[in-house]
Image (tube, rainbow, N blue to C red):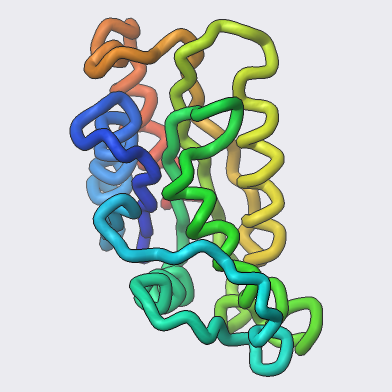
Length: 190
């Protein structure tokens, strides 16, 4: 079982990173092969809406997204982690998501499996939001659920914490890191 973590936070060692690390550690504790990609370290151009992908289901922009496509295709489980920025995922995560337009084209225009094969995949969303309002995660959840649907990844739920903003604040949450570890274990057991 291969678990791919996509770290959408531009801040290394912050709350989102700590949670993602524990999810991945939990998955590894159950024998999963884990890999985390730090989106901020990659060169991923925004989608140019050139529609070239509609012809072959492949993005013509040659950058680090080509590697992300390969990793997505190999993953059995996907963990997308992002802090909330302006009620959505970070720009780094959104650029990656938008570039999955090529995978949308594979699925809906060319009638091909978006990730190259048909097998059961499951995904999880991990997020922190600085605000404590009822809908702080709503827009990000809609985006992530849409991505997973396009990629034929079953939405396995979310691990979200409102009111967590300054670096390291997640450590003050009573059992957030333990929850993340357990969620990682359950992700590969199901």
